[in-house]
Amino acid sequence: MASLYIKNHDTADLAREVAALLGTSKTAAVHDALEHRKRALQAERSRSIHDRLEAWRAAHPLGEATGLEADKAFYDSLNDEDED
Image (cartoon, rainbow, N blue to C red; front, side, top):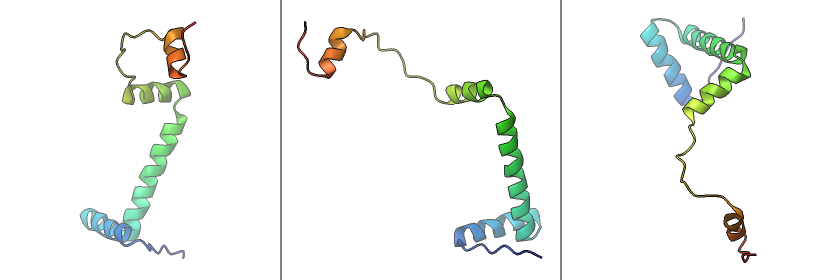
């Protein structure tokens, strides 16, 4: 039989708290959490790249347009170049 020793005290405390809430052992709580995370990762990876990018864009929208024009003069000013 394999064993799992959690060296991180915060993680061990969290496993103990979750086990108490579930009314199970720490091992069962950790197993349940890992199974849940595994299913979530597999579901995420099974989505198409288009769906994942759409979700990312929705979570990270572009900023508002400034109305400023990015013309040659603008780019020249970034490099401290004189106007032609």
